Image (cartoon, rainbow, N blue to C red; front, side):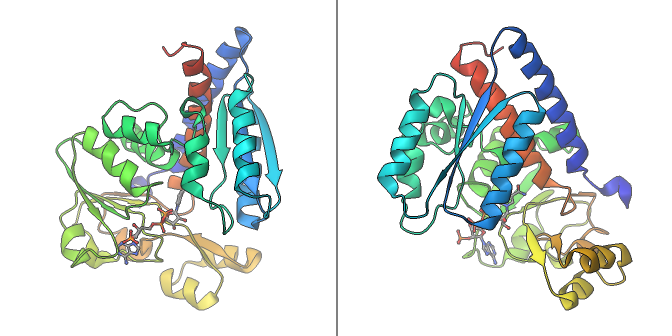
Amino acid sequence: MNEKLLDGKRVAAEIRAEVGERVAELRGRGIIPRLDVILVGDDPASKVYVGAKARACEKLGMVSGTHRLEPNAGQAALERLIGDLNADPEVDGILVQLPLPEGYDTHAALDVIDPAKDVDGFHPRNVGLLQQGRPSLTPCTPAGIMELLRREEIPVKGQRAVVVGRSDIVGKPLAMLLLHAHATVTLCHSRTRDLTSVTREADLLVAAAGKLALIGPEHVKPGAAVIDVGIHRLTRREEVERLFPGDEARMARFEAKGSVLTGDVDFVRVAPLASRITPVPGGVGPLTIAMLMSNTERAARLRRGREE
Ligand code: NDP
């Protein structure tokens, strides 16, 4: 079983170590990469993510700045702050923590970010470059999945890849990256007819729908590689028992913490069929933040024309 697991934690640690080395080299030339994160409002999950990003930066020798705006600060104040960070020569990366509170125009805010500092890769210029196959700063979760596939030698070229979910953050950019890596890609969504028959064609199946245990054994071709992007917090004992029957270690974690995480894949039933599979937690999640670090360091070099 363990040899099937795609260990995102280990790969993320590898990526962070490499970024740390490149940062040290930049620091030797007097360049200290800096990431600035904007948090609007007080969503508790967003606060946790922002804190984690700042700590990750500092651990690798980069600088981080956090800017908090009141939930009712308004679009104009947000865009002014982005403008100030665009103009600040010390700032290499700008990230607006999503989702923004109600009343904000996310697209309008992201459009204002200098594409050279757009470490989330969500600016239309970066989206367009990705589509053309000349990516500059690539969205972190899809980029992390591609790194995992590459480093774990999961075949992509010529393979049938099916991505379930078409968000701008995960599904669409991942489909583009897989296409450029020469997979034959199908992108599914909530209106896809007969999802099971589509996903059963997949050599590489990515679940990014945000629906608890959507992907069961009936969706998976034996021998497929399965990547689970979804994150769900189980807070009811019956759910843990239903999805992880007899898993005493998980139940003990649930008892200790009051919740456990799982994904879009019904892991216990799908894992026996899959050739390789990511767990949740410890799969795709750690890669996202590692790639944000990588993008920040890359932005610092790109801006100075130092891309090697
Ligand atoms: P969104 O809600 O933005 O998108 C979900 C997509 O899934 C939509 O395209 C939707 O279709 C599709 N979908 C929903 N239900 C079904 C269904 N029953 N069958 C087929 N497709 C369906 O989510 P995100 O892309 O932002 O996130 C997806 C999941 O990944 C979430 O659980 C999120 O928490 C997690 N996530 C994890 C990250 C990590 O680092 N591990 C990073 C980012 C997200 P339609 O377009 O038709 O509505």
